[in-house]
Image (cartoon, rainbow, N blue to C red; front, side):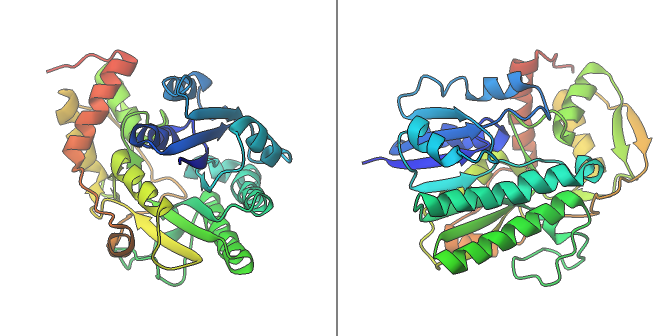
Length: 328
């Protein structure tokens, strides 16, 4: 008998890959909720789920996580209450959150609270919350582990993720729900949002347009390929170790300097980048670095995609999707 999963943000980058995996794996009925937030072109999200639309085990509900009648719509349009909820929907981006913190709070905090209320209403026993490495702020004690004390987020986006985690923890304690919060570390790969660095670098370098480099190129990120993230999410959906609320880092457990990332993209594209140097941006942390030993122990999570292989996969998708020209 198949299990029923509700995925919010299912038309987005990570959500659509997760749906690909579950439908290919079999044994799942998937209901996807997305509101096609205008942060980027709706057509991109539509293309992400185009292959899902005709699948017999897939249902789509166009709705907002803030909708008061979402539970009723999920039951009616999604074919009943889900067994598990994977809550990926959020307003994303550190820099935009500085310009509009109220909107980020409403979607990321209030939206999570509404999803938790729906979980209680429908007696759903498992809930996966997408969080972010940004919650660690500028803490120099790398690699970051989940039990690190004194989180000091430095952007409104990061604050909303801390708040969402805390509300989820309280919900688990009060209502006994099995809740797993996953802190994603700089996810990239095919379908990555067009505003993110790797996508912009490929697009601009391929076209001979300057790329913006913020700072001197020494900032570091723990770039994690989307297939590895999906495997971690699926493992978390089946988590049996521990009860109640748990937090796990999902990262590549490696760091890459910005200047080295640019060189790697140049090598993949076969063309030198034109660099437009810009000052460091408020809200950006100097380094991210995941300790994934807890995820390995409890979830069997072991990232296996090196940066070069992941960039090749992104480039193949980019050429097919955007018609780029491979220049050597």
